[in-house]
Amino acid sequence: MRLRSTAGAPPQLASGGIGGGGASTLRPRARDSHNFARLAVEHGFLAEADVHKVEAHARSQGLALHDAAVDLGLLNPEDAGILAALQGGFALLQEGDQRVDPLVVAAFDPANAYAAKVRTIRAKMRAVAKEGDPASLRLAVLAIEAGDEAAIMAANLAVVLAQMDGQTMLIDVDMGRPSLDRLFRIANKAGLAEQLMGSAALLPAAKTAVEGLWLMTAGRASGSAASLITRGPLAETANGWGLRDTSMLFYLAERKGEQTPYGSILAGFDAVVIVARRGDTAIADMRRVIDDLDRHGVPIAGTVIA
Image 1 (cartoon, one colour):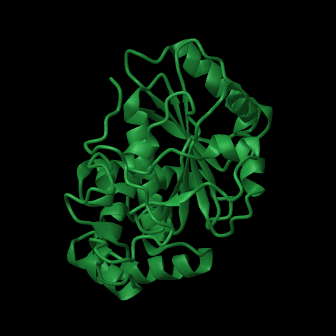
Image 2 (cartoon, helix red, strand yellow):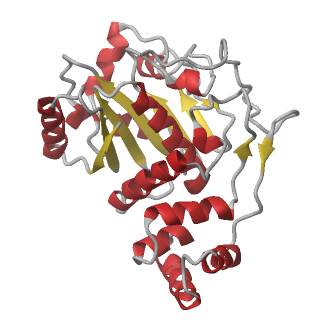
């Protein structure tokens, strides 16, 4: 089944971002430690005696409070994500906002069960990526014969990263069947293909309607552009873009019959999560990809069954 947006042609978002007239965002109150502590105790997630431990650990390790609580084993990732959503500190889109597809539920309802699962995936990736710069991580979602569900998960994960960790760029590496442009309703005129070919005068990334989230679409790929992906580590390519304090999430997809060398492509990444589809993803293909990633020292945060 092809992924279809519920809108027509995606509108071109202006570079001025979402703050202009008519932007329909709901802004929860600003995040602070007292608010987190109050919510955690009121909702029975933490005892009052644990709050000081969490705050001290957060300060010493440079972690957000919800991540510090998980690191100490006082909260599981899902509960920590719920608290972070309740605590607020980021903008939410109103239901019916046509600038983002409703399938990207994390942009509208952080208390949604699917959004909670995606926050758990984020927590696992952050745990694996402890050695990386927390403000500038290189992360990837790698789909192996997983269908459109993997792209939807990547889109929601990018939203959660922007909400919880700051400025994030989502990059669609699926040049054969791009889909992230439709989910975020941004025209796929120039993107990664043009960047790799050197034909883009400026970095071809557009602001999405989600605060702090940028999208580099796949672009209009030719065979030569697609082949450039296999020539060197994407992490090195991304480092050459000169973006500071911006984490990047790359979405890649392999389909039946392909044997892409993902180990060399993703060498240098901080964490990768693999998405498979029950009944469609061949075990042999999974094993081949995992072995290739292991040979190149690529940290695998886990496997998600779509």
